[in-house]
Length: 311
Image 1 (cartoon, one colour):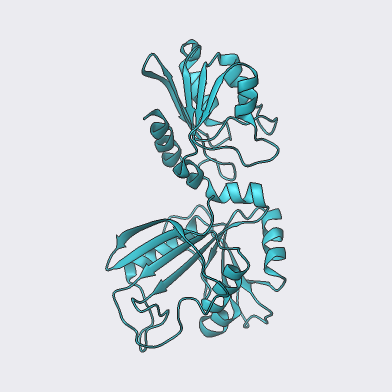
Image 2 (cartoon, helix red, strand yellow):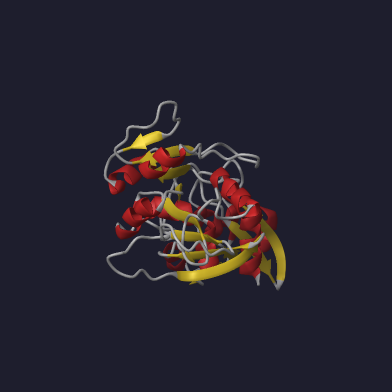
């Protein structure tokens, strides 16, 4: 229950600490919550905020935290040191820290006599999925977004849009929280898209990319990325891009899927039968399994979300 409260605190503070991960924390003593917090805008970690709120009541208490306390000196001191100084008796973490420089916090706590348990919560890992991929794999977290009909087509003859207006608004919201948005050259030549976030609150506009050999149409504001996909993603990560929303057509999607570079799939399924047109993904070399699939209604459409790789 207290770990769920920590997850709720982190969710409420989502993106507040960007580009750092968001961590929620709760201190419980004698069955009572005595301190709680989430990572702050300046980067002060959630467990430090919660421990300071608890004060002396943290001694002998249990700390519930969505990610294990960090064990290295970064822009802030190691959170493990703050936990030990507070006299916490037990730590329950929802996820490990994937950063090779900062991980190992639970092991260090155990070395100092603190009971440390990992619950390995998918929800905890999902909350920082982009940062976790960026920190551990050295590339952005890639989400492939596509709108399809019930018969799996990505176009409808005689219609401009496959999905409804509510779904298209969600796409702009997704752009607003992504570091970069990308399409392939086929989409560029066919639609010359803007790829910006419009009519929604956006902390900033995403970088707008086109993967392919080019050239871009005259007046296009997209960045052309012509190298191998793995190399381009690595370069983007080095430039601070943690999340990439892939909006390209089936050809680009197949390239990313075959290379194992798609982490999450967002499928907006419209209540239509196109009868003809390109399929959502051309023939793959092998089937790809999906996990953690969920669905929700978006206007008349249904949004299916599934993962190709655990964050």
